[in-house]
Image (cartoon, rainbow, N blue to C red; front, side, top):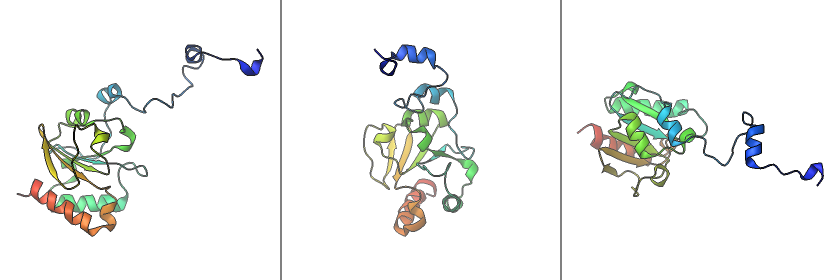
Length: 166
């Protein structure tokens, strides 16, 4: 056996490189990590409302998207302090149970994320207000669609009126 053909077992690799190797097959976060660490969010979550977005380009939303969100909140007689804006992208292994437990959520508005990604036991079509356990869910297309799709903005607005203004 030559030096080019040396095979190291995973336990030897782990002991040799314990501080240097990254396991690319393991998820970036685990349930244990999420339960023990805070999930980053904007706002103060005063009214226990989660806006869950899926943005791989920004930490939360672009400045244009934040303006749309702010306008929606104002129209619903709320402020940024009332909600928790969470970017799902860095926490792709999060599930609905962790979200509701961590934030004490009453309302969960989800943008660009499927029911299966949150490990919900059913599917909900976009723009259908759905109660499940003690929370109210609303699934929507990606938040960036609100910048260019007037119908998407109107559908969301109709749901928000039913949820928060009646």
